[in-house]
Length: 246
Image (cartoon, rainbow, N blue to C red; front, side):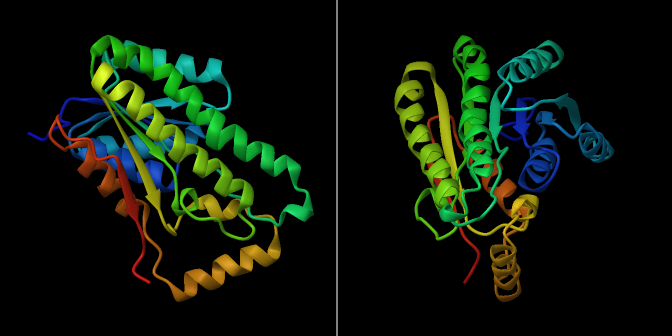
């Protein structure tokens, strides 16, 4: 029996990439998984895969930007499984463009999903975790939460915010409420993130980078999340910085 067998996890942005891989790995480790995203058709496919491997999954239609949608999804998960032990704040967007292109709609969407969405889901699960006096929150930052890259100014700003919020959250709820916080900081991962890039020049740059580097897979990040989740109860793996071999 693993340290997370029988525990209940909620994974946002679970319809593809890191989120889908994480849901599968958590389920394989014995967790009951709430898989949340807007694209329920993809979630149903993922649920079938989880079930085919002997796991349990609950499809939750959720838009992290909509606080009411998040609250409803959280309520559904607790009604079905009785608790919430692990939250994986994975939903995110990464459209690249130079600031002087003034793609302000992309800026605001990144802030809404990457920052406000993460705040919404955290706020939704905290009362239940505080009541349980246990829980583990994973926040998906990035190498862009440590360094700034040209064309990624707003994305980097959102991921720096996630890193800072994770540190503060750990300080405030760790010892007080027995809730662990882990900030995951991946380098380049092969996901749908790059499909959000509307600038053709930066899209080509990412394609070129992919031809020169072996990108991480979503399952690589999922493995690090399961590792941290299975750490002994007195251990908080505060940050995991995961890069492709360059």
